[in-house]
Image 1 (cartoon, rainbow over the protein chains, first blue to last red):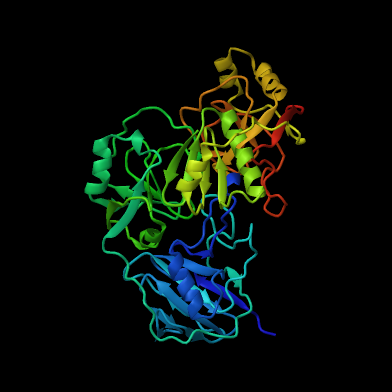
Image 2: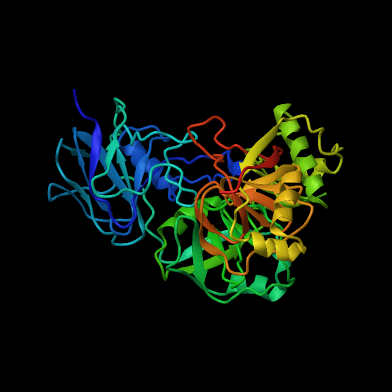
Length: 289
Length: 203
C-alpha cells in the first residue's frame, strides 16, 4: 500500500491550499476564496492530468519544499522560479516526476509573487462547504502550511498531459486593470474619478489575498458620511477613508461600508495576483459590455 | 427601487429602508426558487441587495421596474433562542448612552424580537434588526473580541462567531455556537432568521 501524502519540509512565507473556492455563500458572510491566479492553477492541474477543481498549493515569494511519500507527477507555474528535485534542476511549467521520498524544492520567485504547485491526484484535505481553499479572512479551510504539515493526496487520474511548452504570461512589469465605474462613483468628485484613470498608482506592500492595496494620490469624496454596509464583488475597487483604492481579491469581505468607485474586469485579476509591491498600476476605464 | 450596475455581471439594487431590502431579498429568493432568476449570489445588506453572477444585468434592471414586491413575509419561521449572560465590558457605557442602568440594558435587549437583516464581516455573523434604541460604535475598536460576545452597534445587535477585531459595544456572552462548518447548515443565523436573546444567570 502506498502512502499518498506530501510532507511539508519548508513551508515558505505563506503557502496555502487553493482550489476554485467556495462561491454561493456570500449571504452567510463566507468569501469566495480560491487561487488568486486562477488561470495558472488550472494550467498546472492540466499539466499533471488533474481535473480543474483539484486543490493545488499557492506559494508567496519564496516558494516551499515538499517530500512526497509516494512517486508523483508535479507541475510548478505562476511566478517563474528555480525548481529542483533532490538538488538537481527540474523544469518549471512542465510535468516533472518526483520519486517517493525525494525533496521537491520550489525556489524564490525571480519575478511575480505567487507560485502554484499541482500534484497528481490533487491535495485532498477535508473540504469545507465544498472547497479545500484556505480563506485567510475568515479562517475557513486548512490553515497556512507550516513545516512538518502532512497533506493527503487524492488518487491520480490515469492520463497526463503530454506537452513540452505551454503559453504562460510573464508577471506584469506594469499592472493594467481595466475597470468600469460604479456602483458608488458618484460618492467621489469628478477630479477624483479623473485622478484614478490618469495617475499612476503602485502596488502597496500591504497587499494580500484579501485586497491589492495601492499607493498613490488619495481620491477625494464628493459626499461625506457613511454608506450603509452593502454587498461586495470580486474586483471591487473600494476606497477607504485614506482615499487609496483597494482592489478586492479572492478572500475579500462579502459586505462592506466604504464606497466602491469601480469594478475591475475579472480577467485582469490574475495579473494583480502576480504584481509585486512597487509595480506600477494603471486603472483604465472601459465601457460596460 | 434603483438598480446600479456593478462591473459586467452584477447589480446592486438600492431600496429605501431595511424592511424593503428584506422584502426584496425574500422576493428574489422566491423568484430564484421558481426558476425565474438565474444568479450565483444574492447578498442582502442594510439598504441594498446585491445580485452577482448575472448573464444580462441590464435586462434584469429593466424588468425590475415592473416588479410587485410584497412586504416582508409573515413571520412563520421558528425563533432561534440564544441564551446570554449580560456581563459585557461595555454594559455601563451603553447604559450611559441610553440613560438607564445596566440591568435595564439587558432587559431591553432580552425583550426585543430580532431578525437577521443580513450577514457579513465573518461567516455566521448576522446583523440583527429590532433593537429599539441605537448606540454608537466604540471610538477605538478592540484588537480581539472573544468568540460568543453579544454586541451592539448602530441599530444592530450581533454575536461574534469567532475571536476577531471589532468595534461593537460588548454587552454579554453566549455559549451558543454561531458557526460550525461540520454542521448543516453551518450558520445558525441566515438572512430572515428570527432571534430572541434569553437572559441566564450572570457569571
